[in-house]
Image (tube, rainbow, N blue to C red; front, side, top):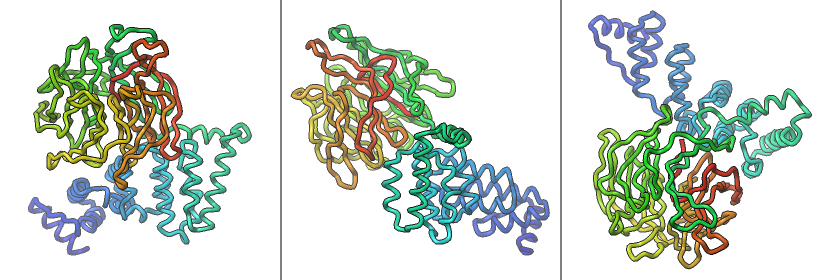
Length: 501
């Protein structure tokens, strides 16, 4: 340490200091002991610049030892934001019991599902079961069990090989279940449980239902009305509210989230096809116009991938759009970058693991498609996927748990569809899962907190008039393979878009 200290003093005097991964911690300790604040600051900036999910736990433990509170807070915040990556790192198991509990109690954990907090705690316990199972109650205390499915927890517990750990977890789960059944029996514990029924602040997700068109029972096609209204759904309170409306009412639009902003692309109203793009800022709660598409498009597929926005295919007025465009938010510019392998419109589109998937839709011959394709934005190449079981246009598509779901849609022979198919990357095939309660064409789908939300759509009316738009929402639990109807939207709609923030 003396040599490092001498080096630090010398380099400080000549106005430069060379900090490396191998020397930064010892240099920082030495500088802190002698109150060389400039050297401490230089080391601190080095740690900030070199922090990533694989080393932040080690940095966190080091900073806690030397009590550099400002940098410690920065590192703690970094772990909260990157929790899902950090919990998969080798360093995560090196946390002490108290450090782990402190992190798991945080409101700031950026998670998709409380189950991820539970499995993070269990992974820490499993790393050294003989020595750590005595901490099971303390380590699991921060987990908000009321937000978890008991069936999912029981299934996890059944797979634990250590008998005493399995029994301890079964006991904890029974206690949680009993308290949920009769919360009035234990008032202090009931108050504690009430606090745990609230999702973590950074885990709270909102689903936005945007645009589309509406048509009431008994209405004619000419009675359809394009919508500008936007509704927001709190996925935990399950309550819909209205937010700022689009500048341009439209249906057949594309919607995606990029860098914390919602983008609405293309669409049509009264047979007028749009090239305009709007962006919603959740902080200011306002919509603003950004650069327009190269071509007007409706029935367009839009998704975010690798920091850019992609607008794919669609109907451009006289024919199906074969081209695809990419939007660069830094330059506020759309650019045509290639063509679809199979032209299509009113199809489903989603991103998964850095690839863009397009599913179903209507072909240039006017028929519904079973085909699906995947696009690699790096190589700019399309590859065919296995075909679906059922032809689907106006289909809702979303990715969840490394699978792609094709939900509902329209088929000329079958009408509006209630069936759902799932494509697993590992199995490389489509399989049917549980059907929805009602058929939905023009349905929009999003994944929120480990569940799939099917929003709106249109279904065949009883009197053979034009199909009726619906305001209902169903959620799919992939672990139970069940759909459940939840709170209705304020306005029925189909052929709109959904976004999750």
